[in-house]
Length: 75
Figure 1 (cartoon, rainbow, N blue to C red):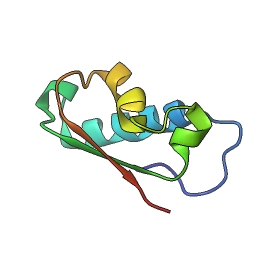
Figure 2 (spheres, rainbow, N blue to C red; figure 1 turned 135 degrees about the horizontal axis):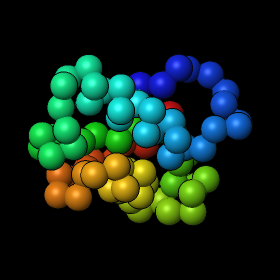
Figure 3 (cartoon, rainbow, N blue to C red; figure 1 turned 60 degrees about the vertical axis):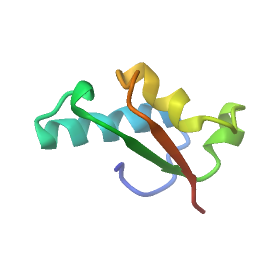
């Protein structure tokens, strides 16, 4: 999780990377240890121009190639 608040200077992908890296460090884990992910957000699909798979767009570059990703649009 990232710090709550407005961060117009930070991209969504940068905030996702921060949250994922902190989580993996806390768990002493690697992306290959993760069996599934839930990606909760508000509006990322509209901002990124990809409403069908925002979690996949944000998480696949971080090493989650095989784990299933469930998207939760939760305002």
